[in-house]
Amino acid sequence: MTAHTAIVFTRYMMLSLENRESNDTRSMGELFLYFSDEMSDITWIQAFQILLQMFRTLLVDQIDISDEKIDELVKAFMDAIPALLKSKLQVA
Image: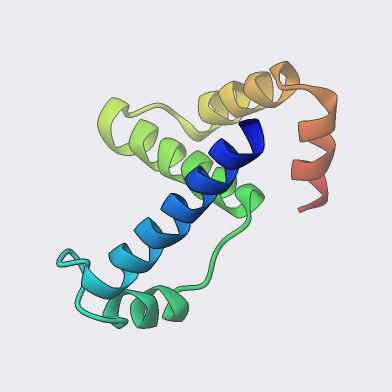
């Protein structure tokens, strides 16, 4: 009975996937796939560096904090993160 149920569910998943790929009105054919292939993925380290740079820019533009104070805040933040992440970020 368990094997029969597993086979039925597997067949249902395969048919549902085929139905979605052939009749999905949310996508225009393979247009989404063509655009997503053009965009390259960034690593989480690059994403973290971009976020940190955006945070620094926000502090300078909105709060008008000096560069020395921002460097102190970034150093305090880097000291607070786990050693494994810190080592990976310092290498990059």
